[in-house]
Image (cartoon, rainbow, N blue to C red; front, side, top):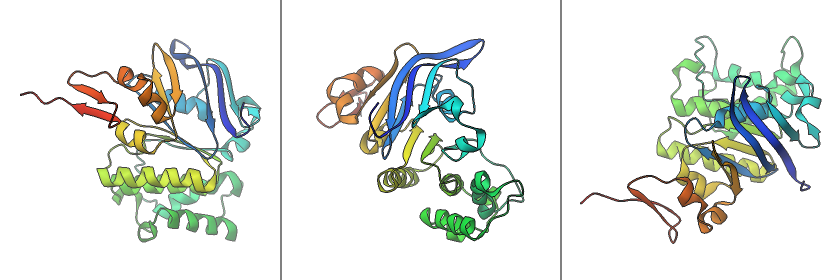
Length: 260
């Protein structure tokens, strides 16, 4: 493993006792990089994320987080190491944005969940980093999809974990919001040294902003590389074959053929 390896998976199989969704997965994720996971619906992207976070048991193989296998972490240690942002919407009527973000401090606050001065400072910094100060006292259920996603990312920041997983963080967002979130996450990885790993269907955004891509296929497993590597060696155009499109290697993106 490289010195800056944050996550390493070896011969990993994920899924459920009665159904293996993906098997024999081998790859690494580096600290300080934004890695995007792409694949068709049903390829197992969400299952892989849940497994890497420890919220779903692996079926076989190894998951190393920094220097330890995931099983060696206590629940508290894991919650202080890995944060995860899922796509499920929170439907709570009596919780403010600040309340939600404060939940990110639970791994540190003990049984009663009381915030001390340091905890409150960290929550304020998370709110400021996403520029959602004006929303801090709003109820969660009143937020737009983009605002809610920013609040969930701020919660993960308040958790102060060196690893952050995100499942479809740009889903349901308009294009400017997608770009804003992706640029923020890349900046977060570079400036803080955090490991940012996310699943997405936004291929064009991933090609432009990701440091590494994981291409997940039910039959071929994982293919890993930089966007440029996967463009130049023909992997991308073969992986995302779709009638009516072709990959323009010169431009580095897919073009749609219009019917005459």
